[in-house]
Every structure is written in structure tokens, then in C-alpha cells.
Figure 1 (cartoon, rainbow, N blue to C red):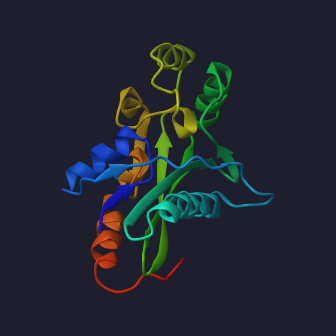
Figure 2 (figure 1 turned 135 degrees about the horizontal axis):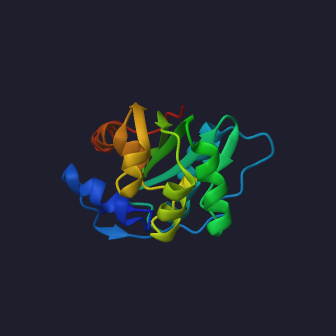
Length: 193
């Protein structure tokens, strides 16, 4: 069986490399990521990860497919990838001086079935000055990032406190991912939570 990562995220590739799990192939899954009416951030992250894995698994039914999704939420408000600098500024202003949650959905699909797990990390930002927000926006690191920041980059200086998995905030909880991949090689997969 080949190991396929259903994500184009270079961060997820780097994280998998840290635990010695190098995919044989990278096949991004293009799906509609629009939240459903009244869908919670946790449910959204899990659903999107599973849908991505299943889309790729349809063409690779004899392989192990790993997919993930990251959802940043402030209360029940989902902070998706910003469409433009104005979105990014609004997100960073909202997160300034507040605690928010980062939900990671992780799905593994094999010939034996599918398993999906979710991970939640709480992140607290310091109060950001208009100059700090402006400087961060100018560096373009916010582009293509849920919540408009990259904790592994310059935004690390914004983080006052973190409770939970750091790698989840980067894009993939390594502890849960490793357990799921090791488990997928043994028993059949059919559990969901």
C-alpha cells in the first residue's frame, strides 16, 4: 500500500517529515470548504478532513490516504483563510488580546475503512498594536493561513499562551496522526468521533 497525503500544504509535509512519515505521493483534494448552516468549527474541521481523504481514496482504493483540515474559531465565528488584506486585518484585530481555538480534523482512509479524529488547541494572543498588525500584514505571511497567521513564523511573537498541541496549530497534530497511521496498518478502520 502506498501512503498518500491529500494536501498541498508544505507545512503538513514538513510536519510528517519530523516523525519520519514521508508520503509516497501528494494529491491535493479540491472540495467545497463552505461551512454548513449551524455547523460547529470542530464538526467542520472533521468533515472537511474526511471528505478530502475520501475524494482521493476513490482513485486510490488500495492505499492509505491521510487528509487534514484546520479551522480557527473565535467563539463560534470561523476565521477561514482571508480573501484579502482587509480580511486579514479584521481577523488579527479580532484575535488581539483574546483566546481562540484551533481545531484540527485528521482523517485516514484505507481499504478497510475510514477513521477521523479532531484535536483542539487554545491559543491566546497578546494585545496587538496597529503597528504590529500593519507590519505583519506587510510581510504577507498571513496569506493562505486559517485565522490569518502562521504560528511557526513571525506571528509566534503574538502568542502569549498555548494550551494543547503546537503542531495542530501549524497544521497537523503529530501525536494523533502518528497513532492513526500506526493503527491503520493493524486493525480495520471504521471509528469516527
